[in-house]
Amino acid sequence: MDIPSPAYVFDLPRIRENCGMLAALRDEGGCRVVHALKAFAVPQVFPLLREFLDGCCASGPWEAQLAHEFFGGEILTCAPAYSPADIEALLPIATHLDFNSPGQWARYREVVMDHSRFRSGALRCGLRINPQCSTGPVPLYDPCAPGSRLGAPRELLDGADLTGISGLHFHTLCEQGLPDLETTLAAVDDQFGDLLRREEIRWLNMGGGHWITQPDYDRAGLARVVAQVRDTYGLEAVWLEPGEAAVLHAGELHATVLDTFRNGGTDVAILDVSATAHMPDVLEMPYRPEVTLRDGTPGEAPGVRPHTWRLGGSTCLAGDVIGDYAFPSPLVPGDRLVFGDMAQYTVVKSSFFNGVAHPAIILRDENGTLDIVREFGYPDFRHRYLPGG
Image 1 (cartoon, one colour):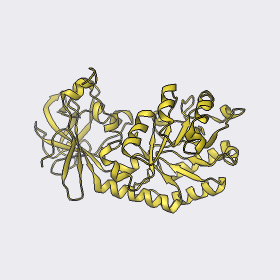
Image 2: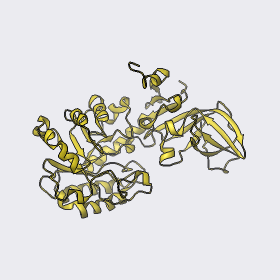
Image 3: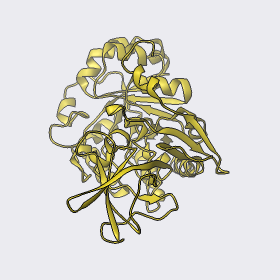
Image 4: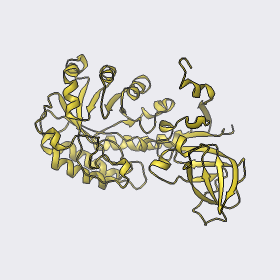
């Protein structure tokens, strides 16, 4: 089967390999590992993920409901704030419900602690903390920046009534390795170590952003750190919430050149995919994705090959530019391009901006067989605005 364009293609063998690493870490370190739906949330892949992982973490009631319906296992939910309707929806399905501030916990403590699932122990509640320890290079992804809205700094906890809170949660990393986690843990111990040693605190959630499945990640070291954290504070459980790690290097975005022209000294190629609509981290992170021609010839840095092209998206946003890439020969309309590492933070952040065609979703199995699990058309665009689709 020829791959349609545009299309996301997700490689199931690579996801299985990644998840095997996560499961090995869980067994060696004695931790619990859940998949972060904010990075990748394609239900057709959930059966594979749940072979290895303990459940999902969700950023609100919709993700939690998706996990409840299609994934199963533990459902850890944490949001910057909850509405009363959010709490009503989450109480029947979440296994861990983490609050972003002592004020939010105070607002909902009575209704939560009165719920039968809390009283039975099926639901536990935690508090997100902010160790105010910035280790990442990108300000947009730094929850510890001054004035951050994510997590409670220590001064907010002094004097707060934490009755009913049985765990603490921090999430400060983004595509980072073990040294940054160790730096963060030192700050956590300095500011919150006394709380972690309280008898009523039984678990610690160390969030996501751990690049566990990168080839150079020190997974053995992470297992040792997890075990040390558990023993130091006498915890029942340590949780990790990687999302990107499960699908790292397991996705492609297939595109077609629609038009080419020259503007001043720049050769421009317009594609049937968009940075802002289909791979927004290219603009937000920002980062430069790898790209190849369909025959595998890589796009190189400008000037490395004879013909450098600016690859642009098909929306009206002037900045919808993926980057400048050099190829052995000129691009022409109809040429196919393949962008690499396009599983994480693509489909979950994609949009119908400008009404551009949305990429199909395709799975590739161990035999190389392709399965188109979702195609999009005008009715999907229309459905966003009109009741009943």
